[in-house]
Length: 448
Image 1 (spheres, helix red, strand yellow):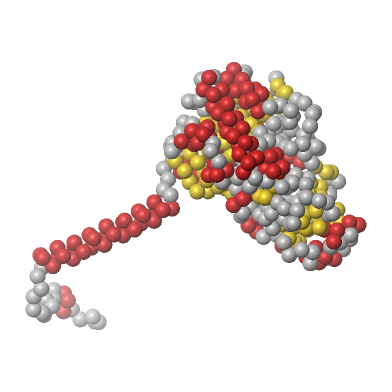
Image 2: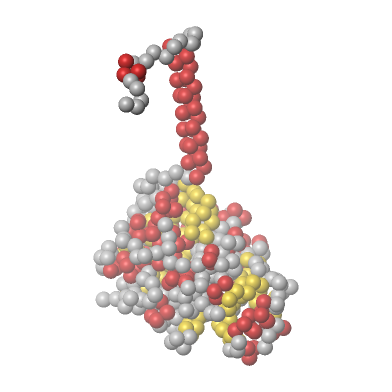
């Protein structure tokens, strides 16, 4: 029988800390990759020392919460899995989606998350502590055990529930995900470059990592679990001097703003071309795209929920209608920006020890998880080969190693060639020109 742990309390601040595991939880901290370099995080560093580190994860565009959480567990770009923003409108169904209204399977059924696949393929039960979408009947299925989002439940309670499920549940849980809001909530409030405030926030996040490790060790699970710690996005600093005010460019009667800054979705109420042209001339720090003009690299143009006009603010700029600045840090920007990239750390029997690689796309996390779990993956946009250097049982060569091997082979072959030439010269010393000796049949005429 399906067990759930639900509350209908606050859903504000649904932003960031996540984790998954193969018989293990994974915890994702919504923070930038450079937090590891700029702050002292002893528990996280201990975790990384025994495992692997991806220094930058290329997340999916748009770099917001709901879309990237669903990308991680489906391996699909947002245009493929259908969760294209934190706030959406489906014109055909005339339905609206937001973090306060996200429980209709209609929005989620374009894709099948890994917790469903895990249970459908009979590998074991899945569990989830507040991961976006995990309390929704997707493909008519939820994780066997789950906690509905409740901001008032602290991190320790979430971990204890996950560990309980992993350690003594019936049926046995072999996959679990865990979500935590920090350091995202504080990054919005203070800005990621506020060292004084962010230092204390990240110290607390690091203590949470230590608490997770302690609980897994105490339960006897630590040496048998594979644990991933990652995030859905990074964070950029914002400023009141960097506002793009839409009311200065066009009247609100001309459009409906479906999703907001820093990537805003615009549904024109009047002539689309007129609205587009007014926005195009609005502010030089904002790119304006018709849906059909969105760059291919964003993988963000082939779903009906993507609105006719998309606005993309430059890093650090905020799109408002006529409001004041509400936050000093934000995400959602172009996913090529380093400030939008989180890191990924993993440890356990499936992963190498003391290894690192520079980057990985977040669509590649899904096939890696499927491999570790022994699942046949659903169609996805990721590539397992990109994660092979993280896995203990996979042979891989990094690009520098491959270049080194090619150069080394070339040098060895060149050396052998020289030795062969030298050897031949020694065996057959030069001699005066002699007439070519022909075989008898060489004198046969060429035509007859």
